[in-house]
Amino acid sequence: MRPPAWLAAHLAALRALLVFTVLLGVAYPLTLVAVGRLPGLDGRAAGSLLTVDGRTVGSALIGQSFTDADGNPVPRYFQSRPSAAGDGYDPTASAASNLGPESVVDTLAVDPQDSTRSLLSQVCARSRAVGALDGVDGRRPYCTPDGVGAVLAVFRADGLTGRVTRVVSVNQTAPATPFVSTWDGVAVELAKPGEDYRAVGGLVTPVRGDAPEHPAVPADAVTASGSGLDPHISPAYAEIQVARVVRERGADPAVVRRLVAEHTTGRTLGFMGAPGVNVLELNLALDRSLPVR
Image (cartoon, rainbow, N blue to C red; front, side):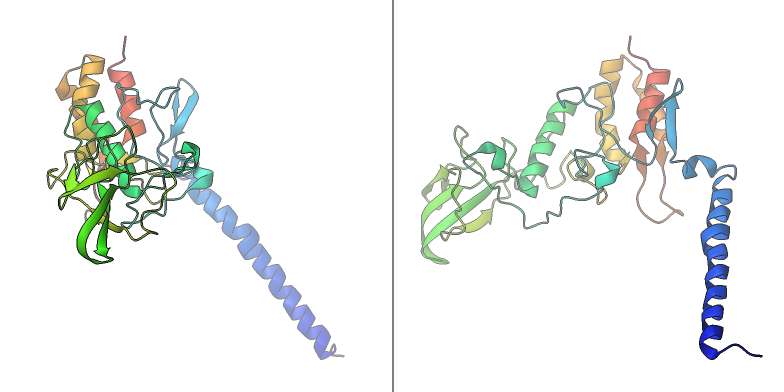
């Protein structure tokens, strides 16, 4: 006696559920676990954790900062690229800043805690800081000497045209000095917190300045990666840090450069991406080979 059609359909569905539960809920996960145990893959499957004297100090896949309790760079270590993930390199908050090329005007609130910096000003401040730390030229196009975006709000008599009637350096406040004293014969003012100069007709005008076309501080030193977790820096950023690390450790420059080269990875498959230096692995190698007394 054949079962009713509705019962046959339910039995077929139950059999399919059991088969796919075994295949996808048991066999597939166990297969992946087994593959992750293969020699050469086991470390990566476990998170590529790095240990020193039995203590886990980080992961080769996730960047971290090398700063003191006040957030200042520790000079004897190579510094990582900036991070926008949480408070920095937070794998539970992987993200970018979502700021783009048009983010050039800071929000200057009356309460400094409510102020936010544009992407341009963040880049300018980072470049200036890296330049001071590593003894290189930290100037960049469209940046002021005091490390904010060189941007003016230009007011004209007829809105978009006509003579210039007023000019404000929108990212600079007292007691700073305007990065240019005059613009089209009009004295440049400093911005006042709480004012929105675009809303009252100011034309946003970035000013390139006289910075070199190719800045000494590379792009990865002043911008965060898309994930905020990138553990690598460019060889160019590592190179400008060599002199500082050599000085702080009293080391031979050739030895430090050799360690940098040993921890530099090439392009994926020989043509994708760019070479990178794993900062955590490099700093661990420095502590092993060139400990600071």
